[in-house]
Length: 538
Length: 80
Image 1: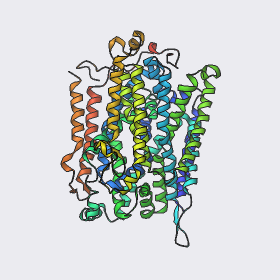
Image 2: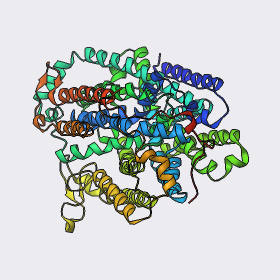
Image 3: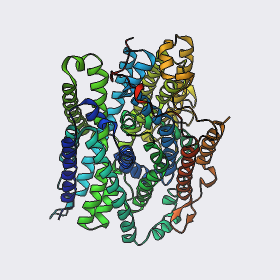
Image 4: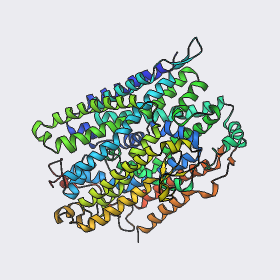
């Protein structure tokens, strides 16, 4: 039996969950986009976590660990385990409180309300939407890769053939995600994410143990790898510089600024649901990332010589090689679970479009609440279809992880100072927000130009080597094998600092919002959610 | 003053995260876990402990709104 059958059965269950959620739902905007702000503790924790665990987390991290070693866990996972819960604690809880008070459903609604602005909100919408689309494409690409790898078998002529090719696999994933988001909205997405997270945590652990047993024990492999010069450097952080390691800590700031995470924060029934989510988040991240990074490193010993674009499916390859067909199928379904986290991004983009554009510019008033929901559904179909076409076009052209980092993570991270200013600084203004947003957009464009112009230079570099992109500017813009760096640090660090500075300086130079608006968001002169007095801990 | 301790704890965690002391070591803890990875697994557990403390002692006040605070128009937003 081809293990892909089990994955297809799993996908059918997922579609059924979406349709079941549709039957439970109401035909109102708040219900479709936010599940009526009614998610319970358990669903909230697992769906929020599942939303963050994407193709990038599983396939991208193992692919990166294949080339750069165990340091990838500290680089991305343990830093996320500190920064993401911190942003949920500081920002997420406040967004929830403001959403409950004033009915906001998106970040842009909050910004418009907070800074008395219209067009600037639309600029932020445009940048946010542009940065979210690549993330959705990653989901479709990951789905195509995973199904192609899991369904691979040896033909009679000895060649390895995929029963479900990348194109068909991507299409299946796109249609499944589109179906349950279309029918189930936020409720369907949250239920599916919860189901997927449980599945991944259970079967991921089983996969890890079984692969280890099949390989003759992890201790034997690690001992062997530590004694070979070519692989020993994968067991420490020799392939990562301290500057890169430090500046990577800015990346997880992006999490709360991703619209799907911010919107998910509004779905909790009670603010107390955040408590366990914040505490258990670092542990959940560890449970997913430890096997991904560890198996990625072991894959370097199993399948040596792969190039960056070829390493994103090393875990599915190990499953196919080292487990039985039915188990490979179950574990493939678990990987699929994470790969398909693009559902929340699609729903978020659709919520943003219907709330920030359709409703804001009068569509809801003219056509009603029901038409708004159906506009959202039409948008889901459009976005998924377009993402699939782009995923076909970019197949084999771009490393999944690089695509995500370059276009989405850095940009969203650099928007975090805008959110912090909106929540905690009375004197912040819409012009400060606009300056910071334009800075982020220009920085992304600049980084992209530098990156594409130095591609030829990167090909000539060996891992660990750097070269000046503009020699007259010294070490300001350097190129490594995989990225553009500034004095060795990732551009995201300078983008965040620049965004914060512009927010402060331009706000101080421009007129603040009216006293009425400030009083609305800072009742009694204090930000909502100020620390309780000493001794009043709950 | 009450806000200083949480800031100090978070800053300490950021410093601990840099982990320059095991940068080049390939020592295997329990024979199968590279020490750089073992350290950061420990760091993740420590982060969970830190958040348990923050949630317990420093939970923000006044987040649950009274029903009367909720406006009638959920669209929100003012014109520029």
